Image (cartoon, rainbow, N blue to C red; front, side, top):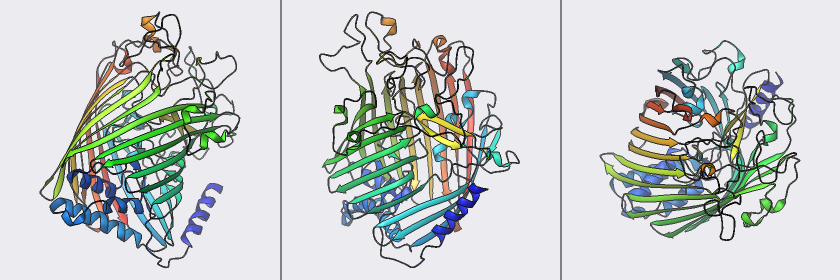
Length: 599
């Protein structure tokens, strides 16, 4: 009852703010999947410009600056239409009153053909993805204060990601509509709101603080530092931009692993969290865990971009803070605080070599042996950190066709087996610079916390911060899409992945060249030779798991705020669980979307 009372008080406060119109305010924050950014990206591609900033979300001021970079007097046809739609939308949003409310109703129906396989159950195995899902009912509050301040808060009623008696995929039919799955309160999602923040900005800067979805990069299958597959970040972000340069500083906080880290022992029993207090509202929250990063984007020429990103995962189990880690102008790799931080570096570039064509790439380095350091590939008899890196490259093509844009994109990625993994801070009984079974690591696996029922059960959903498929993978993807702006879209997608035996629970270890069977330097691996904190039988993994997905999707905008859409995917997995004795499995997953929005 106290929870609902608090929610009503918050709604009353935000709803009682002034309704009077104010000056034009371009500080609205546009989500990473907002169509306006998509229209601007398509415009840049059609006109032969390198892609606009890929560090989302974006303020209205920044998106407006992206349009200003285009010489609108030279535009015609589809390009002119894209420009006009984006400009009209931004200007209309900027002229909104101080307070604006909207109501969204989203009915999502999920159907699948294989209800017996665990590989196809749960949001982590549903192609549509949890980050893209919507609550059944969503009440949205926008606030434009003066010319420089913006606030957003959504209050939703929906179904929790993990609730007590029913899991997505274990029955043929599933839905996001409360009370249809089970007639009690335990299935309701009490982790709301998923978007709630305050923002401030000017003509060339923006800062926001709160909960929002993030994405860093233009990858189709994912991005190496921050992927868009996480439904939200609890973050503080500052960004400034002008002409050919943009700088972003981010702090994104997560629960410390000591709050949730569990392992399965050799008897198949789950050991409790390391702090031993259980998962509930009364759990004492302790420790600091956050990603800290800065990202610099240069537009070297009209058609060439270059991006440098450096960041650290900072952890302190006793809440101690080394402020140098929070410096927005420092080389994080020179912190020399291995017991608290794990650094990562990424380089990105894209080149529009002709109108309608763009080639892009990403490279990330998590661990790399410098000259003079022990190298596991060449040094015999000495243990060394395994190299950990990822590489991604893609090609895009776009052309105007009728009233819309036809886009084709091919992309490939390669990640080494130990990417995102590492040892932990100094823990009792642990050999320095070695992660022992049952211990967490200062790695790039993060947790989102959910409250899934009225009893206060707390779930920690683990995922990679960066590339959603993690390390030890080879990925290929082909996508073709046709978009008629503000009317309808249709796309088809082919996805192929070979994934080795390593996963987010693989225990990190140093390796030596004297035991070639322990090298595991190249992906995809066929043997899991270290311990695994969630699979005591990981040593039985003996093959590469191969996944193939063929899918189609589309959406159509109807009058009066209504829209319909859907996605259909055929999925086949060979050697599921990386065990050759397992038979090939398949599933057909369908998602039907019905939406209504009242402004």
